Length: 179
Image (tube, rainbow, N blue to C red; front, side, top):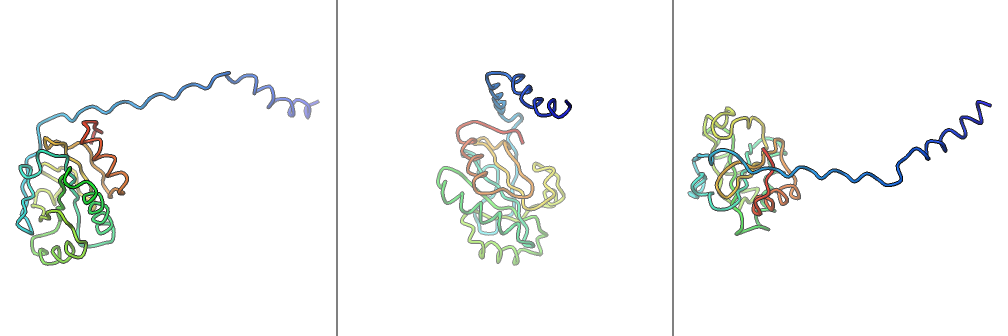
């Protein structure tokens, strides 16, 4: 008798399910960034400015990199690819979180990665995870600013090309994710 019950029990559960599938809840629409635009200026490696003033007016991709490890090189390649696909609709810049003494090493990294956008050395506050980019203590980190210079998205550990494309497209359209 227990065997019959075990055989029929799963069929009884089928009758308990609802006839219509429950629609999935729509994800909440991200709200616009709050607060004033970020103010920053970094020492450029190639005479092209890396500052809030220079980037304002378009959605901007900032990548925070270091010369050590393959993760930064991979992030640089993703950023390069997306930038070339979106030029001139977006701005981009690389900020190297390394001491100024490593400037030559950073230039070699920048040139070998063929970065088409401006590159700069991070200042002491940014390297320490302070200042306008507070909390960036890991490289690589990708960050997107809206056209007014407010942070709308951040990803520590780097981001793939598809993710960067989506976030930049959303920033251009005025659809934001909270950082």
